[in-house]
Amino acid sequence: MGDSVKKAVLAYSGGLDTSVILKWLQDTYGCEVVTFTADLGQGDELEPARQKALRFGIRPENIFIEDLREEFVRDFVFPMFRANALYEGEYLLGTSIARPLIAKRLIEIVNHTGADAIAHGATGKGNDQVRFELGAYALKPGIKIIAPWREWDLLSREKLLAYAEQNGIPIEMKHRQGGSPYSMDANLLHISYEGRHLENPAAEAEEEMWRWTVSPEKAPDRAEYLDLDFERGDLTAINGQKMRAHELLAKLNELGGKHGVGRLDLVENRYVGMKSRGCYETPGGTILLRAHRAVESVTLDREVAHLKDELMPRYASLIYNGYWWSPERAALQALIDHTQQSVNGFVRVKLYKGGVQVVGRDSRTDSLFDPAIATFEDDAGAYDQKDAAGFIKLNALRMRIAANRKAKRK
Image (cartoon, rainbow, N blue to C red):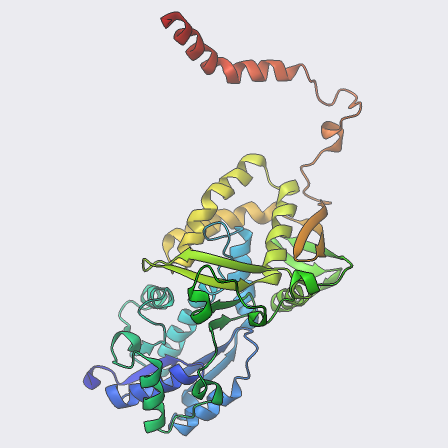
């Protein structure tokens, strides 16, 4: 096994699992290890990952710790929200959309360092193994992929801890005392929670679990209004203040979380075949989705909007299933982005007790809403209501013919 890999790039968080993987790669493959740690806005201190890597003999030039927050939101989250993507009608794809960026950087680091393999800590039960590996193969077809959870025998927490102790891997007190009650993933778009207490689908999530959002009961008793500006389908300003993409999403998270917006308790169908329960906090994304649909409502042609809605479930499934780098996702993205050229305007939303209500929207340049035609008052001849009779008769013609034929048979 060790002869086949000389250098591997490891997606490394610095936590227990990936620290064990780092040492396991050295022991099992005898290869040089390069570590890659991405800051996607998860809020963790990343510098300890560097110190842990150095402790296990990783050369400084082989330790990559990168701030990818802006690229993540600008090039992955925002394009996804142009499509109004929801998986199975509810899930805002917070974990799924981060994986193609991580896969991209893993392959770029492979090319930069001359490595011949990548390694990740996704388990054989999850979707992430699929997302990482489909992305890697799409970007570098000949890459070797090491997935320790599919190879080793450290398949329990006890075995992981024993291996860590035997090899001098630091074990935080929370792991010694049983660890976090949840398996968590966090980035600027969301936090997800899975496992343990949540594995009983009938059990309500514990209030102490939530980190970004207050409960609606504890949210402020006064509503807060936000004015959101959009250009070509992307959020550009909040209350008139322009910011970078990742700053905008972080601000929406802060404001939405304060008002209890964005909690979701979901049993989803995993790509690998099982049903899995997860709880999610996506306050900024929940506001963004609602607002984006609102500005589209006044700027998109009816049939274009309906076509987008028909394509959205397919687009969302492509992201969920790991096909971000596929030609079909790129083709859909080109169509979606074409529709967004006219999605320019503002939306006013009201945040209150866990809810996001759109209370106003307009576009000074691209609105298709014509009050002279839509009015219930005198429209001065802008719309001839008699035209509706012919429209209705023509659309009813096939049904009238069928009904007449049925009546004759009787």
